[in-house]
Image (cartoon, rainbow, N blue to C red; front, side):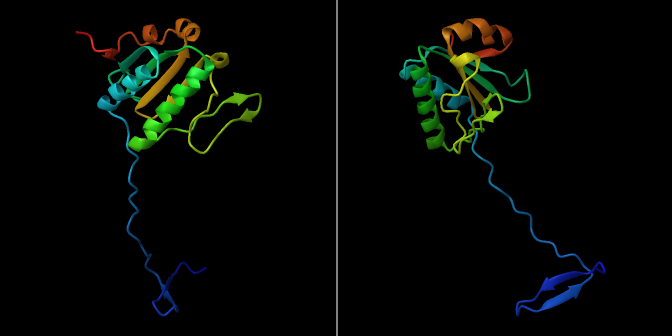
Length: 165
């Protein structure tokens, strides 16, 4: 090729040109992300569906990869899956983007089209993570919560839920 560019005319014929043809950049609408007020709504949603000891931590001053953690204790795997379903429905209603989650067992990877793990979890079934970018939700059994101690790990974070009076 001689370095020239071809341009298609309206009549379908080709026109040779030495000038590059530029098109306007495509601007994609960024997905809606949960904010501080949504964190409170998600916490209340978890409590309405029997999530126990629900806590939200503001991590904005401590890291760059997420703004909030929400942590809730679940009573069983079925309870975990139910809470996950309710959060998924809320996220869909609000237009939030949920990051694709994967679980590795040997060489298998469990991906699905809607971005949730559907019961895939860490710590042998005791911990499920839902990543909405600015908010990461941890659904944990009491054993996993006591073992991993996320609140202690992020003890310098401000608690935004429950609100202390």
